[in-house]
Every structure is written in C-alpha cells, then in structure tokens.
Length: 380
Ligand SMILES: Nc1nc2c(c(=O)[nH]1)N[C@H]1C(S)=C(S)[C@@H](COP(=O)(O)O)O[C@H]1N2
Ligand SMILES: [Mo]
Image (cartoon, rainbow, N blue to C red; front, side, top):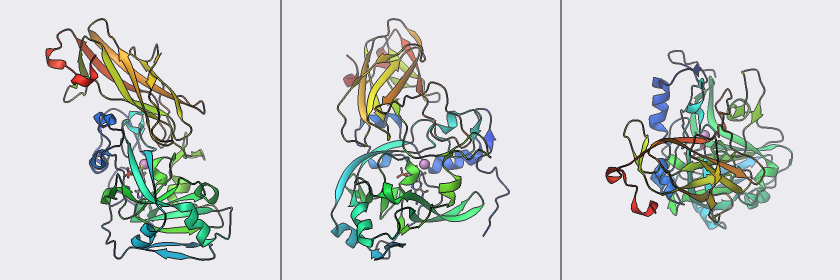
C-alpha cells in the first residue's frame, strides 16, 4: 500500500536559514529533549528523559498484550508481561541518544525532528536478558537479522509500516541486551514503550524498539524502511551511505549561571566557576573531556569522575576562572578509548544523523554578580 502526503513538505527536504517550519514545530512539540540543566542528575528523572516517537504513542492494555518470539526458530514462544517478569531480571544503567541529535544545527538541515544537542537521557532499565530467550527458541539460522517490531504504525517515506528494526543474531547474543519492562524502578511510561521495549546498550536510540510486540528471526538481512532507507549517513540521495549503529562520543555542559529567557545566553558573575557536565560514547569508554573558553581555539583537560556503568555517561568538571568581563564561547569535547574525538566542524550528511560536533555555549561574564549568582554549590 502506498500513501503519499502532498499537502506538506516531505521528510528530508533541505531547509536553509534559522527559521523553523510548521512541520518541524509540530514534531518538536511532540518529541521533547532533555532540558540541559537535567545533566545534573546521574539518572535522568523519567519526565526529563528525551522522547522520540515516529508515529503515535499506542495505548496498550497489558492484559491483552503478548510478545511473540518466532520466525526461523525451532520452538516459537508467546509471552505475556507476567511470563517476562517471572524470568531472570537485571537492571542496567544506559545512556540513550537519538541518532538525529544535532540535526537542527546543520546548514542546510534536512526536514525532520529538529534536535539541537539535548536528545539524550540516562535511565536504569530493568528487564529480562534477550540472549537466553533466543537460546530457548533456537534460531535455525545464525546469519540473518532478528527483527524487533513495535505496535505503532504509520507512514514514512510513502510506506505504511510498523516501526521495526533488525539486529544481526550475533549482536543479539550480547549479554547486555534487555527486553525491558521498567525504567528507574517504575513500569515503563506510555511514551517510553509500555509495557515492554528493547534496550541495546551502546547503540543509537532507533535500535531500542518501544511497544515491542514481536521478535522474528530471519534467514537474511532485514530490509524494512527504518533499516535499509532510514538511519544512514549519506552525502546525497544516491549515496548508499553507512548504516548508523553505535553512539559517537559527545560531552555536554550543565548550563552555568542564569539564562536569558529568549536567547538562552548565560550570564555569570566575574568569579571562579566550577563547570561540570557529562560525556558518553557507545563505542568505547570515555577517556578524555576538554573545555575551551575561546570558541575552540585552545583546550584544557577537565577532571573525569569514575564511570557509574559501562554504557552510562560519565561526569566531568573543570574550574573556570575568567579574568575579565565580556562574552565567551564555552566549548566541550569528548574522546573515547577507540580514539573517536568530537569534531569542531558540523558532521553534515543528508539525513542529519550523528552530528556530534562540539557544543558551543555563549556566556556573558559581568562585573556585578548580584543578579547573576550561580547556585551556591557550583561556585568556589
Ligand atoms: N516502536 C517504536 N520504537 C522506537 C521509536 C518509535 O518511533 N517507535 N523511536 C526510536 C527512536 S528514533 C529513538 S531515538 C528512541 C527514543 O526512545 P525514548 O523515547 O524512550 O527516549 O526510541 C526508538 N524506538
Ligand atoms: Mo532517534
């Protein structure tokens, strides 16, 4: 079935200039980012975690819900929520980030969800590991993809579809992958996949299928829209591109001082300030965070705290001692143990994925600090 939308801009249209379109605004009010001040929490409170939903959030009656595990398997299974909860459970702290994070900073930018830098969050996910479930159903092929299908349905790229993504069987056998039913100790809220979602630590958000209803083993690659068309880093429409997989490193700064309401420019008193934030990578542990107060010309290393979990963001801090009032551009960049470093230039591509160029924060340092004191615990 083909469905064409003709009365609005279509996804992927390139947009020039800073003005947001109605289509982007419509997406931006549905899908919210994490307010940057929430970087202060190691575990993001549920309502502050970013949300991205392509179609509609399904209202699921858990007593009606079941997960089928089938396809090319010897012993297909059908499980309800109670069955899943009766299986061995683990809790793992994972930082999730949307692959489109940074898209709206590109120029021109592809029409889609217009994230700036804050499509991220860290939660404690509880569920049952995927691997034993797969072992139990006994896949007949070890060379294909396992497809994870959500209950949500819609149209994208003129194709009607359920939201679904595949992962190679090999990748599915990693111990950390969870079929999760709780977030921060609570049942999953509707917007994060109630009653059950997939968690694939280290991979960008699109892999963590919400409202899971089927797990299907194929004897071949999965070629659904969200796999073969979407989520590729490509320079033009006819470039086959590179599939998006694991999260590239990024560091973000807890906004210092106080903001101007409209511009979000930060105001700080002339004093020493402890800058802090979090850094993460899905490829390898974070090994270095650097801070620049001159727009990325000179860099100094920040102090890293111990990491809280292998796939969670890591806290960093840096003492900044501006010596004179004026405007500054604070930048922060992360490096991981695989040698990936955040670029200072935008990582432009046709879909606006994986733009992990360094964050730039405009701050104004003012002499009189009466009105612009940062919270007491962040000044020294
Ligand atoms: N079923 C379903 N799963 C989905 C999506 C979706 O639209 N439908 N969006 C994906 C994308 S693109 C992202 S970034 C993450 C967002 O997860 P969150 O909303 O819990 O933060 O969910 C992923 N899982
Ligand atoms: Mo995403």
